[in-house]
Image (cartoon, rainbow, N blue to C red; front, top):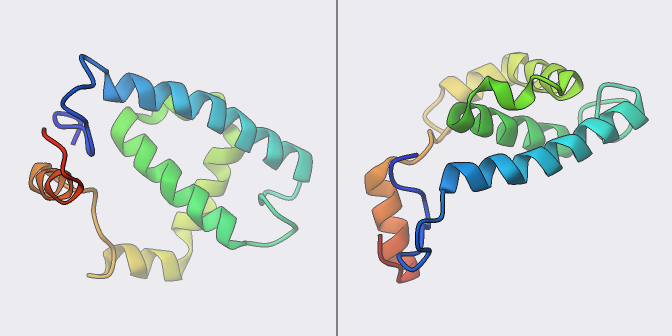
Length: 120
């Protein structure tokens, strides 16, 4: 996926997809870490798992797969949340099922770019 950035526009003249992801993650990750710190429950909202926790854990898993675990070295509360969510038995079953979609490959990227009318 890193070789062909999804939804990359041909006219993006040298934009570095992975660098942009890192930059976006830094500001977003810090905000999410601060929310966890302020809430002081281990969850983003309230005192139990919410949709927000699952969504953030899924996005964080994808970011780690793309950029490596170094992006969360300074975000221990986010790491704890991600581990909590992906360790749930129901989440483990989902990840191992055919309902879980792995990150798209180059063919997937080409299909999406065609649908969106973009050149690779």
